[in-house]
Amino acid sequence: MYDFTIVKANLEKEGFAVTCFATAGEATDYLSDKLAGKTVGHGGSVTLQDMGLLDRLAGCATVVSHWNGHSHAEAAAAPVYLSSVNGLAESGEIINIDGTGNRVASTIFGHEEVYLVVGRNKIAPDYDAALWRARNIASPKNAQRLNKKTPCAAKGDKCYNCNSPERICRALAVLWEKPNGIGRCEVVLVDQDLGY
Figure 1 (tube, rainbow, N blue to C red):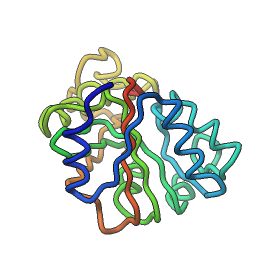
Figure 2 (figure 1 turned 120 degrees about the vertical axis):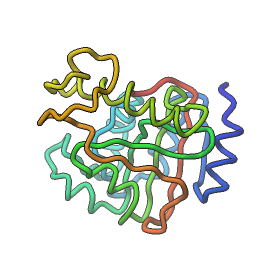
Figure 3 (figure 1 turned 180 degrees about the vertical axis):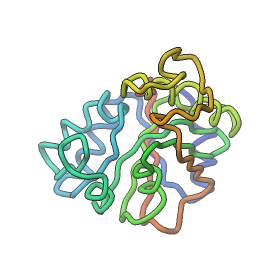
């Protein structure tokens, strides 16, 4: 299993709760049990989709998302919010990049509980490497998935810091510590590659 010791200790030092799982299935079991009967919002996440969590929650919780016909605002009003991250530094910084802002805003403020699910592929050794990963790996893959007309989607190799009207990199959030504007914030680390 990936050694989550360093990143777990650094996240806990900054006020985050942290749980670690060997497989996405174990993490899905844990979260579906924990969130059963609750209203859960999410802003769209390939990680959550890859692990089957969204399908599982649909059978035991109320899931609010633009993926199932709700607005971004309705998902942001849910008491519980689920997201992944674009980069996580072993030193503890959590990085997300967003086009609309709904996802980054919801990881900072307004929820009773926030769960950030992170596959081992999202972990980088330090802040600079995690930011580089978010901009040059996660963002181009998301732009391709969304069929955006941007240089990063066309080439799939890096961020071009473009001015395209379809640019999806419009907001950057870095969590240095657990924000005061949310209740519980738990990072769920999974020893599998998940999402972008």
